[in-house]
Image (tube, rainbow, N blue to C red; front, side, top):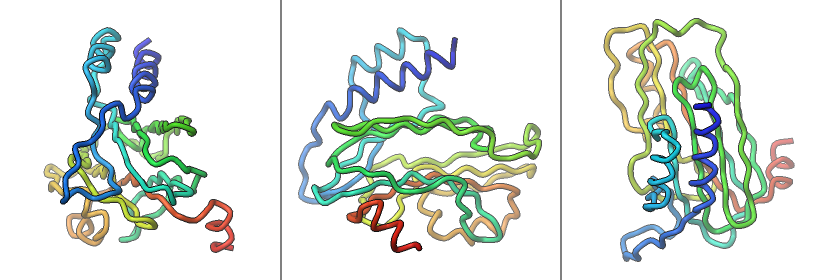
Length: 210
């Protein structure tokens, strides 16, 4: 029942997509992603269902009208390089939308749901590691403020460290771009979730990779 109500809650919050317009500021980027500001109705729905949001990250994003595709990717850090667990671009042409990520330990599986005016969908991924991680501690860094979106550049939304070590050093998600920083402490597992958008269609991107 808890899993069902959690999925219902995410669906309701995604349906209330970008209900509030952002105050315009000269210093604000034109394309950005930021933690969603839930309205009163969404907060009341969470209380009604009896579900907290601690395991669900919800973000709003704004783009311009040249967007053609989007990517949500999950990686594991292997030998200093981000090795994709799931990636791939999907057709996306809306100028604003919302994404929800649901997970506890990423190695135990995760959910990704997106919604906008013309696009919506959700995917649930199962266990991504056969290793017994029950005795490992973990720490998750998340994007907690407005971040500029640039076409063709991945924006990390969450980075999770899992280790049997007694201490885990804290990093911001932007350290995704300097993965060598994680190597010096010998963590057994480091995972990341990113979002990216492109002005190329899915067909153009696939053709460039052939």
